[in-house]
Length: 486
Image (tube, rainbow, N blue to C red; front, top):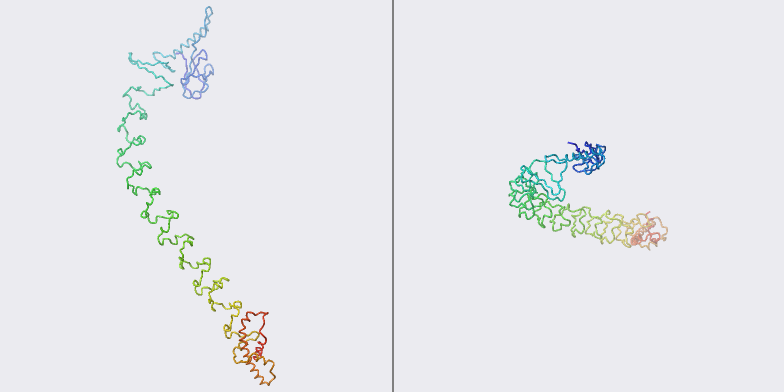
C-alpha cells in the first residue's frame, strides 16, 4: 500500500520531523497533533516539516498528504497539442487522490481508522448483531447542548444501560462510588454494615435516642465538652469524687453557701479576705496579738481613753515630745526623782514649784548667793550663833570675842566720853583702867554687834563703793578692843 502519512510521538523538545511520501504541491502537506489539525509549521526542506514549537511530550503527531481534488493540473482543448508532462501530472493527481481515498476509507471488510469518525446530523450507528434479522442495536445521542465525550473504560466487560437489572455486581462498582442518593429507603440493613463502621459522621443529628444506648455504655470519653447541663444531672448525684480538683470556682458557689463548717481549719489566709472585710464583729476577744498589728498602725485614735497604763509602756518610752504641756503634776513625780541631770537650764519656773516645797535639804551647798536673798529677808533669828567671827573693818576674831562676853554694860555714849579724857596714871592704875575699859568695850561691842546684825541685810544689799560706810564712831570702840587684845 502506498505511503500517504507518517506518525510520530512528541517529546517536548523536537520540532523537525521527516516525511517519506511524495506530493505535488507543498500545500498538500497537512499535520495533526492529538487529532487536531494545525498549520503552525513550515518546510525546513523538501522532506522535513518544522513545527513552530515542539509538540508536547507524548503528543500524537500525524503528517499526511491531502492532494487538491478541486482542479486538475492541465486542461486539454480540441485541436490543441497534448504534452506528456501535462498528462503525467493529471494522472499523478488522480493516483494520489486514489491512494489517499483507499488509505483513509473504511472497507466493509474492516480496517483500521487512524483518524476521527464524525457522524453528521441525525446519523446513528446500527449493529445487526449475530443474526441478520429485523432487530438491530442502534447507538444514538440526545441532541448535545455542548461538546460531550463518552469514554469507554480500560476493562473488558458488558456495557450496562439504565434499563438493565440484576447485571451490575459489586465488582463492577468502584469503591466509594455509591452515594446516599443511590440507595433506596431502608435498603441498608444491619447485616449490610461492617462492624465498627458507623462513625459519628454517618449518624444524623438527634437520631440517637436513649432506647438506642445500652445501659452503662456512655463513658466520659463519649461526652462532648459542656454537654452535661444542669437538667441532665439528677438531684444530689454530683458527689465530691465527681468534681475535679480546683474546679469549683467562685461563680459556681451560691451566695452565703459556704458556712463555717465547710471551711477547713486555717484555710482562710490574708489573700482570701477582701480589703476592709474584717470588722470588730468578726474578731474574737483577744484575737489580735502583737504580731498581727503592722508597725506604726496603732494611732492615738485607735486607743481608748485611759487604756495605756504603766504596764503598756516600755522602759524609757516616754520622752519629752510624748508629754503634754503642764501634764507632769507633783503626784506624777516619785520622791527624790528630780535630780540636776533631769533639769535643763531654766526649765523650772517659779510657777512650777509648790509653796514651801524647797527645803534646806533641796538646796545645794553655796547655791544661794546675794541675788537669791530678798531685801530685809535675813533677820537675827536667821543668823546662827558663832557664825560671825569677823566684823567689817576689824581684825579676825573680834566678833567672836564680843559675842562671848555679857559683862559689858556701858553704852556707846559712855564709852565715847572716855575717848581722850584719861590722864596718865601709875602703872597699876593704868592696868586696872585698861581692864575696865576692856570690859566696857566688850559691852559696847556686843551692842554694836546687835546693831550690826540688824543692819546686815541692808549692808549686804547695798554694799558698793558708792554706799555710805558704818560711822567711824561705831568702829572706834572696836579699835580700842583690838588694842586691849594686844
